[in-house]
Length: 588
Image 1 (tube, one colour):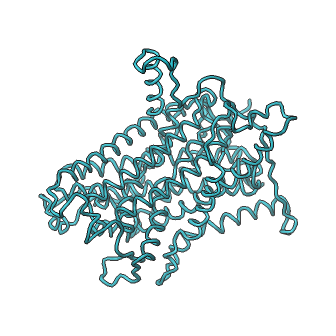
Image 2: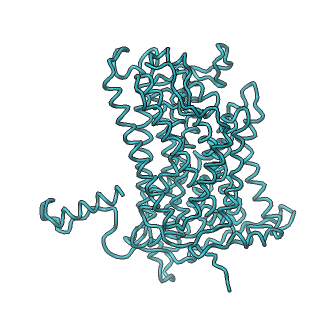
Image 3: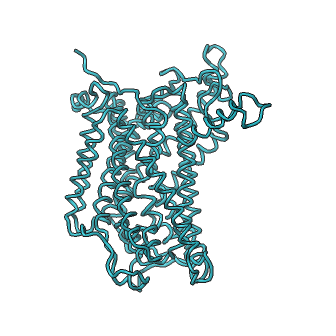
């Protein structure tokens, strides 16, 4: 009897929406936002978040349009393989999978760190906090305990059938949206209620602080002589650039929308990819910008705990700008509650990281050419799924790589975590650049097909046709913009490693992904074309008929407000029903 090797298409639109949102909201927003504000200042930090959002906005639209038209399994590497080169596609698949298992380990490492929640008594005294101690009694536990417990939890959730998994992700996403919205309101309220000892409510934007930080420490420390310090226009630019790189880690996860394509229930009827892409872009951008803005209203960028984050990358909740806002305003209980939610957020993001990595590995397992000959038996085992469509083999394999989270027992786990996240960001940036380049090729290929009168279904490739599943204006320009921006970020992501004293470990962590990507490409060409590079040939099928292009069923497009009776008032029952359906469609 043949073994099952296909996934189950049981996810609804709302599941995909919230799974992608939950993947983006790990510890990045809650802990990295303070790091960005320290480097760039409260105003320039918002600019950094907007620039990072623009990269996400460009890449997600490229990936979303291609996946909406061709909902293939493993779109992150399938489209580069089709439209650039087969070897590039396989290399992209492997570095994307590795990035996601690294992100899994980073999220679990962050969870282990956040149990070390304890404020320095001197800091509490300096800000006038009413209690002499603030922290959890868990900082004495070995980090290995938390790593073990949360890895088990993450693995068990990913063994659920995808429909149940989607329901859980939906609950996680709703809780995160509610929490972040409440966090924004919380910071606005405490800013408004301050007695304004500094003159006005924008005191963190005024002297002695300012819209941007007055100086940029290349290698920050608490030492009065902290090495190279940059100021002026040069310092502001490099602070902004470094902040964009840090902000981008917080956005990693939006490709979950495309990764779930093979498990979506009804792409034509629900237009899942289109709506999920637009919703995620709006939600993430608005919440991140507002979160960074309100956090910067209550905490100055030179707070000692923000310096700690920059030195050690990620520590615990007591280094979060949102926790610091509560402490500086002398609020009890809220800091502990916030830190508890940060633990929950990082753990749930880890659950999504395992899902993404397992689905990418399962998609790779379905392609014999992506594996060396000696690994074919192992590949066939990974390809199998349960009767409910769960790829147990790829879940287990990805989970095992996540065991590197036990690096938390090392003397400086936060430094290790910082290097892990840098490596994952660079790997993802390579994948994003390749996706944008794939879209450029895709755009021109379908344009030729739309003008080919010999094709019966040429209307399916016409971006101006009302049945085309998803398009955005100026998308070709955005693809070029995303490609060039990602390329610059890849090359200059950790320029500080070159400033004396040179850090070999930071350099390797930040740049090893680049040669690894090209080595993988070369290995596939050696496998297919031999050792002589002159005989290597590009193998891009430019296939646009497998699977057949999806078109939207005729009728009303979802996500657009169309009144049944335009001449009737809005409160007409049918018009009101249409309005309610439109609002719910964008909120769910």
